[in-house]
Length: 205
Image (cartoon, rainbow, N blue to C red; front, side, top):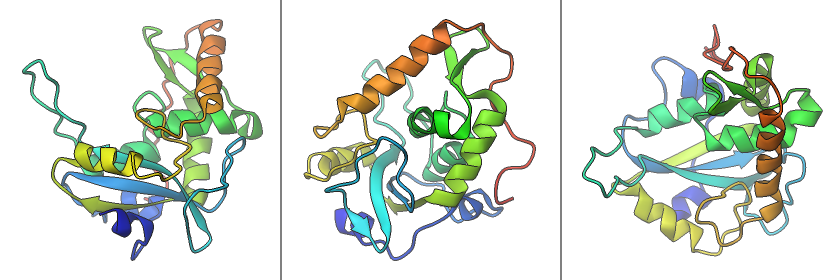
């Protein structure tokens, strides 16, 4: 499984993930994000590279079920990858991290929306993040049952994955603090209505 993520036969772009019909299966699995441009403030040294792209993040869908007897998530690779490419920061920890790193360069900021408990980059911030990811973020995946077990294996394998915050022994606390600082600043601003999505025409549609 790790070998398939590190030496993928193919990397997919936003237009393929968002196409109809999409290339991504409706199944459980683990996915890996490669970048042809490293976001600001991320140190790519000692990260795995495939061709000219660097691996910075690994995720899964669905997550492990809760221990309280509630029904586990029905999310799939298809749904999760579409959320990363065309959702908003409230629904994607990857988008939240990337947006916080890119906010100064792209000219947007994190804001509270709705009741004030959710944070997104609002529009055009989420739209600008869509475009950046379409240009620079590529993904591959492996279909696998119980992907949370596979994720634990990957995170404990010694791979340096700077954009993974949860359960990551190589976590750069500086990135975590950048996200916290963005939230603190958003808390000082008024709540806005625009939640950053959905967009009228997803990238690649």
